[in-house]
Image (cartoon, rainbow, N blue to C red):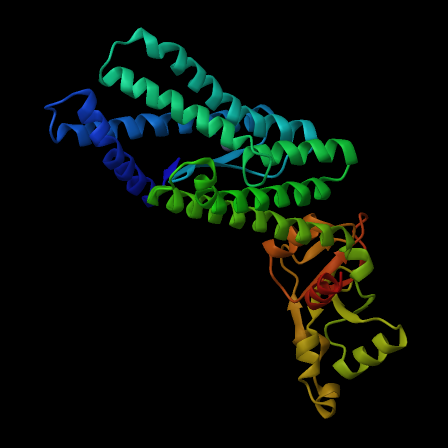
Amino acid sequence: MRVSNSWFLIVGLIAFVMAPRIEREAPNIGAWAYLIGVAVAVLLYLSVLLHEISHAVAGLAFKMPVHSINLHFLGGATEIEGEATTPWREFVIAVVGPLTSLAIGGLALACVDLFDQGLVRFAVAALAGANLIVGVINLVPGLPLDGGRVLQAAIWAVSGRRGLGVVVAAWGGRLAAVAAFTYPFLLPAFGLRARLVDYFMGFVIGAFLWAGASQALTSAKVRSKLPSLDARRMGRPAIGVPATLPLAEGIRQAQLARAGSIVVVAADGCPMGIVNEAAVMSTPEGRRPWVSCGDLARRIEDGLMISADLTGEALLRTLNTTPASEYVLVEPDGSVYGVLVAKDVDAAYRAA
Ligand SMILES: [Zn+2]
């Protein structure tokens, strides 16, 4: 669990805003009002923590590892590894958060009248109000709010397309952002006066929602391109040559076989290295008969032999684990299918 610096700022702010009201509840309390204000703010954040823990527990129930819970000034965020594999899981992980907040708020509301006037009653009422507001706002159907993920899951379930759900829910988030930006300006129409804090909160929440929604749209776009990435389709046919073969002869054989790449193999046919294309290009024509293929080959280490069947996200993850300019693509039976050149993957991704 992490607590960001902005959290301390907002706890201070809440305490500052609440102190005058606390003084009204308990006169002659003096500077203690600020300390009690801090205590109430911490209490509110403990309920935010429960909200986040509910997301984490739901994720764990579906066997998804939970990385961290962060508390920041607009609430919290739970980082769960990977993504829900079904709309139902997505829905459950998202919806438990607002439900937890509404439950805490409802419970606190029911308890308010158990206390007479005073500080405890004030704290319980603040807990009720804050949690009911957090619960309701989080159900607004726009990303990055929980309600946005609920909407996303619903569209995914109906259409069978996760990407469509993300796009619609992200635009819901942008609409919510516009609503947050403009609400202080609409208050006068309802006979209410907009205070400075309304403009401030409208701007901060609007910016938070807009940024989160835009990020969701970007990742949906990236994701939509991924399925077209197919190692087998992008791979270049390769020829196997002994390490001692002169480069000029290797290139001649490769051209003859219409192969786009040269793999250095041991006597038993086992791949040893990949001839680096950039190194070949920078070797002048006249030098090529005097350089061996083995001299320009990168030794095949762990991670440079990858399955020819890799596609999409799994392929990118594999390439990112061991960054290199070339990889050997292997068939399930261990034989060499060809060579995957990193810049071909980049080009295919950009063209998608
Ligand atoms: Zn949540």
